[in-house]
Image (cartoon, rainbow, N blue to C red):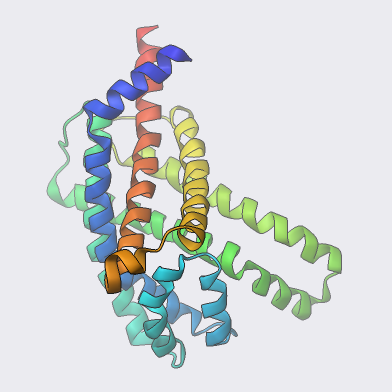
Length: 270
């Protein structure tokens, strides 16, 4: 274990993971608002009020961050706009593909390989990866944030027991975690330009999913209770909060790839 930690730390620093995570945070910030626009536009088709959506999102976002998106949320939720739904999805995919391509480069570095795939093939892989991450983000948003409302709707529609609601409040968190693990496995297998088996990446995927949840909850708690980014940064405080969260999430994501590559290297060396 000590040898693994020592090798992991050495590779973490040699591959400049903090710098690469900063690149990821910038790329994903560019795609965040188109993706948020797509998600909120999709919510307009669900039987949820605007105030309820804002209240539920506010439970999980730092206070400074909700101010950045509240006006747009109110504007989009009032009207169903199918053309806006398709446009926001396409624009989010295009902008976020740059971020997934950066992940591919970072994981290539983790496995000490060069990117030899053609431009078109690499971009197709990048789009597939970002589609998987969109699914993870949607599940992570809908189940933890709106899962109770969905459970109540299902309860009223089918007439399930109160025990179902109690079980659902636990199950929805496990479903969210499981989906994120699956998406991370999918990402760690496809992104590097080398052949990787599923059994070689599940360790990093589980640790990254756990770390992602813990960092998100811990950082949100810290910002909401201790940090005052608005006083320090003024009107851009919410953007700074987003950037810091994306930066920490990027480190966790790339750390999972480094864990997998370090384990593979140690198995080869015996």
